[in-house]
Length: 182
Ligand SMILES: Nc1nc2c(ncn2[C@@H]2O[C@H](COP(=O)(O)OP(=O)(O)OP(=O)(O)O)[C@@H](O)[C@H]2O)c(=O)[nH]1
Image (cartoon, rainbow, N blue to C red):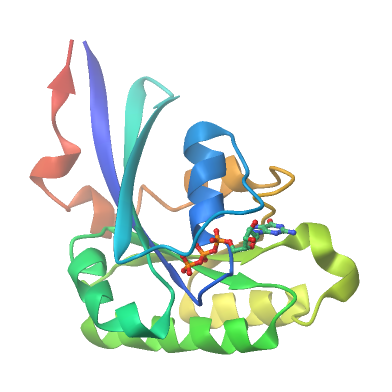
């Protein structure tokens, strides 16, 4: 018998920052230059061994386009953690990230664990957002931050594994943490 812990996580962030690409790299180890914008949201799972248990990530990848904004609460409300993504080459996307954090604090589940991903770190020569700014901001809201590249498979596993899944908020998250499989 190995315990399986289900970890519900949603991805939020501006359109085009690479949310679907991060999920695709994590779940399928694949990158598509011509990936289409998400319509509504998409759902994927991935199970990975972690110590003497299995972690089953239940991942909601939301659509970043403004016209889908009103759907986001349906996905973040059921999540124990949120990965909020910006594009290190677009200052605007960092601004949008801050708006998501504010919305989560106001309307998200109490104690939702937040992780920030500065994606497209393969393009650091055209960077607009210094890592220092992201670190300072993350610290101010008690979130972890990591720079990722879905394209070059940098820090993608680390992003999902680095979420503080031992947070009391998650341990008390109830039935979805406790099922057992043979
Ligand atoms: N150079 C580079 N390009 C990336 C990276 N991740 C994603 N992209 C590209 O950025 C574009 C947008 O990626 P998506 O994954 O569709 O972005 P999204 O955040 O899911 O967008 P929405 O579904 O509209 O919210 C695509 O052309 C990707 O190929 C990366 O790490 N590096």
